[in-house]
Image (cartoon, rainbow, N blue to C red; front, side, top):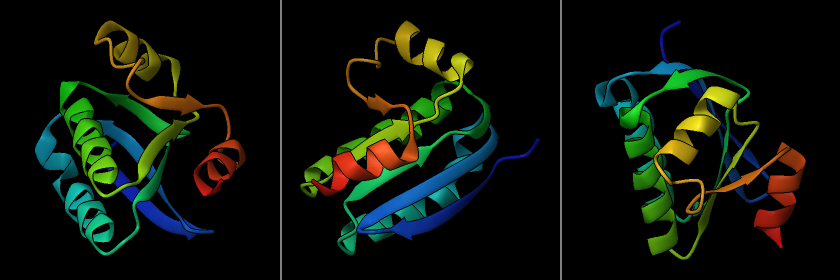
Length: 115
């Protein structure tokens, strides 16, 4: 499955729904550019809902690190939810599970980001 995404606004949170696979950073350049533009415009609270994400490698991790860094640099936060086991193992293997805040549900993430 090719990589696609959808972005919605829920309360004051930008919710990103990535779908498919990220195997090369160029596949996610459009997503990265759009979200970075929204962060600079003031949408600094971001939720990545991975319920339809099949797989990603270090290229996908690079995108997540960039978004996390930019959201925090703009006094915001990035949360991950519904992370599939393959991606969860990648976060653990790369020791990034201590850097990213991962929650179980979208509702839990929205609550955490709006409090």
